[in-house]
Image 1 (tube, one colour):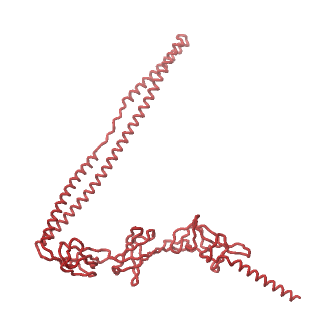
Image 2 (cartoon, rainbow, N blue to C red):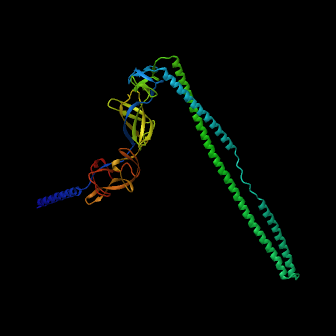
Length: 467
């Protein structure tokens, strides 16, 4: 019997364990399975990529000093030329030179006439500035004669009151002694009242006149201020005109110098007349383009372009809202055959983007395309959470923290919504300014939607400790 009882007990225990196991399994079947992560201490790394093409930073156009027909082109694209080297041969006749000299003479007379007009205008403007500076604005005179008369009358009136009051006092004594009647005493009282009334009227008149004089002085001061403002505005206008006139005169002077230099060259060519002329390279460098061929007329337009040896640059576009790339920053340039370091020379907003100009080592070749990577690390460390762990609603930013509570089958995990203050971010992490510590597990991923306070299962429970 004892063995049978032990057997029944063992079976009952196994059945209970199985029921508990299957109950928890069923209980957990629809519970969201989440992956958690802990906040970290680190720095943001912002990155943006773009593409651009290498070009020479400095280019120089090549021009013909005279109009003529191209006989021969002596260089090709990508050729290296030294300063003074022949690049093309032109054919011309003296008629072209003579016509150009006539044009220069007319241009010189026009510029000289314009300069003379400008000089006269400058002298007149300087005279206007001098006259304005010497102007003195006088205010309208304010007469105080009537006010002085009123004050004199008031003084007399006050004396009259004093005498009338003294007479009244004497008359009162006489009336009390029976020397005069009450009707006679009344006349003395009326005299005091009349004198007082006159003094009050004069006092009101004086107050009104003083207010009028004060207002007149204020109006005079205001009028002077307005006149001085008008004068200052005119002086600013005249000074601006002087600056403009001076700039135009300087430009005219430079034009006359250019004409004189060109005339000197043309005169020399007439003296050394030849039916051919060579166009020389103005600087040493690489020929990047040739715009002429034999038989063409070479006039005032550029006939070739030379890239001056030295700095090469790359232009690319980045986001208008990129706030971490600055002038002077380094960046990485890469293509299938080369990798270079560049330096940001300038950033210019243009057509909804920022145009970046980058200085590149001279071993890069013009026309090469590079992928440009801009990357910058934040100067100090912050509390960071993965972007996937951060949510946002009408109340602000939040995370779901993992916490424990007593459930139907013992302790259980649940997700608790927790508001935080978020700062800057990069492609992976966001700065948490306040609201978190480094030891609070947060929900990063979930196999199904869940809400605040809902029970969850931890996929990486072994990685975390939840008190």
